[in-house]
Length: 506
Image 1 (cartoon, rainbow, N blue to C red):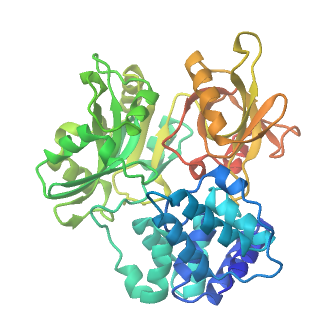
Image 2: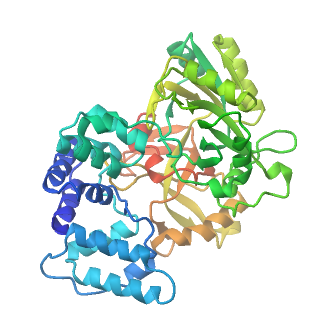
Image 3: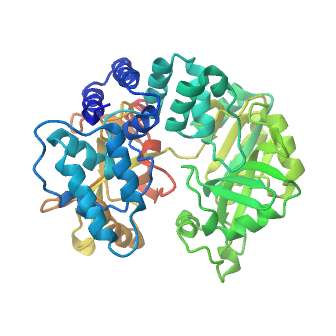
């Protein structure tokens, strides 16, 4: 297949907001691709390079200025092969080798192909091919049931692998996908509840209410002495968390997959600031000298235990397995509480320094990768996760610091984030210094007052509500927004959508 066919499909997908048209365009592209090409094409149009890191930076790509080719000649296989060679380049002379390969690639590309390549290689390919749309397209092109394709994607966490299974193995291969110890599973997510009483009424009487810890989501896998720890975005952080590895190694089992949270605690048992926990994920893996700097695991689910997959079993059975293997590491919880008992548990969570509670149906299976109604989260104030689009230089005591943040909500159709407001409230001196140092690494351009960023940073915002506004393109504006914390554990694809923001309108 010509590479230009992929680029044309990407442009067509970006040009429409219709999910049906996106699916049809992607499905047509996959129909035209060979079985060998489909996983690569699916990866590219999902903004992913199968080879991972290519050793090519933003500056290297923006400095390339070869004259575009007048006619398309690149193929999918040819570009994929060149990416393989880029990823393999290393050692003495690798810089010159990479530069030569980039010159070869871009010199053979048309203007539209050059633009696509730059955006793909810098992580800025946002043409609207969201995971859900791509799953639909894979089902359409392969002729396989959508439910089977969707389940396989949730369990593999890989669109290219799912596409390959659908095309090469069909329904039998898709249905055969199960949990695999050592392969991360997309985590189940919770839906915000209007109130604690509403959540208890909706999910009761057979339910459990867990503390919602102010920590970082982890998924732990163990097969004998082989242990892996993943973040909510499925990033492998095993090397950075030896304290968690040692805890899991001591559990009385051979194989297990656990879902939970980790955080650092003060001497009095209260959670340290979220940033303290997240800083450990970027460390060298050496244990902290301060014993209170150790990461402590708290688990709330068990998806597999000693050869038995539990993901499709009700939560009550999964919790029984968790109690068997790690009883001392359960998140504080109450089972089948009355509304009054649930409220007391909620108050206890806040008093202990945590975010609130999670209300869960004991009958529900684990909906991997989905925001299921069987889990509902309750917090004392409303918070949302938004994308930082830019920041304005401060004045007065904030002179010299990037201060006022430009905030965007995620476009559910895959377009660029949609601006919904600004805020400079809630920023401590430490956060001002951090964002002034950090934002330059994500800068696209600037003017006299503002530094504009690539949409890569997620920030948690507390607000009193939203109101209709013609000032911003989404038609809504935040009311009394203030920064709670940055969320390095979340990707931009996990930010709240413009539809979720509009749903807050009175």
